[in-house]
Amino acid sequence: MAAWRSLVLTLFPEMFPGPLGQSLAGKALDKGLWALDVLDIRDFARDKHRSVDDTPFGGGAGMVMRPDVVDAALCAAKDGWTGRVQDGEEGSGRKAPVLYLSPRGRLLTQGLVRDLAAGPGVALLCGRYEGVDERVLEAHDVLEVSLGDYVLSGGETAALVLMDAVVRLLPGVMGNEDSPGEESFGEEGFEGLLEYPLYTRPAEWQGRAVPEVLTSGHHEKIRLWRRAQAEEITKRRRPDLWARYMKDRP
Ligand code: ADE
Image (cartoon, rainbow, N blue to C red; front, side):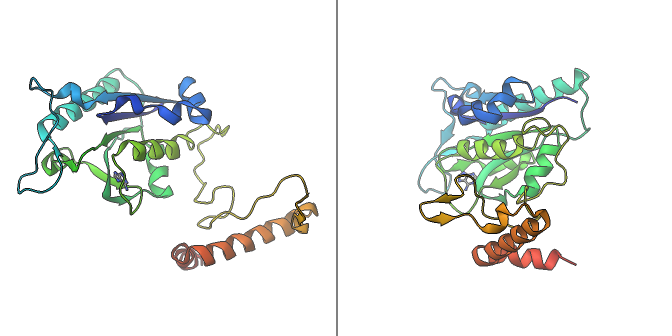
């Protein structure tokens, strides 16, 4: 199957691959386990000033990215995808979705990350200024995705976070040759719970000992201790996750 591919549309192409050129994601990129293409939205500006934004109708602060310019970039992005399909590359039959990173969007969860990793890839539209003209989002059936309830200065860092979360799930990237389909939030741990505390050598450090059970060699006791810790931490720190966990359990 063709490698998972992401195509980023941005006014700051030099921000990519950025941190994703390093470490696990970077090695996977070099090996062709995923692909990254970047389109500079400014290349699709048509006037002599190469302007990509204008003032908002109705007044207000800041600038809005123009629909005609963003549309031209999105059309070029979609042509790119079509070309690949016509080249006869095997795919899941699913079309890569166009995502717009925005605080208004659907929250990025591990579930959505898993869905995206299982598909052929994504096109990621990164906004700057106040945002993008609404009409072009409607016309291209764009899915808005948010990292959380805070405002970033642009979608680029959010796009990097999204790709990082997806790429680590791809087959071969973390040494997992098979797709880690069963993995969950709290992957090495317990489905739907925050991670239990981790310890390594030295067994005693600054007067603090590692919990005894972890050096007992008793695997079942260790598993039960870790689950109890994960439950306790989740209950205390994230009552929302805890409520969902309790509801989902038979
Ligand atoms: N762009 C600006 N703020 C954002 C957020 N919270 N999530 C995703 N994209 C954004």
